[in-house]
Image (cartoon, helix red, strand yellow):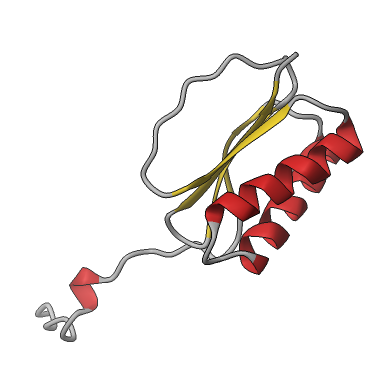
Length: 105
């Protein structure tokens, strides 16, 4: 059987995740689920302004799980943080958008 030629542009397609893809987390299941939901909602609402999305996530996490939460939302960044055990989440959403949230005291 002969390989059929690919349609134009098919080889250049990227896989875009429309669901949250958790790369790393040590949070307990309940907190992680809540953090993911808050993150997705904020990033969808403020898709054009990552700074406002990060601020919204931080404020909601502070209210629900105590203060000292930190959040980074964006594309193409690296990070190295110190955090409280069981209080970090790193995920991708909507393709290239990454969200890191952690708590430190």
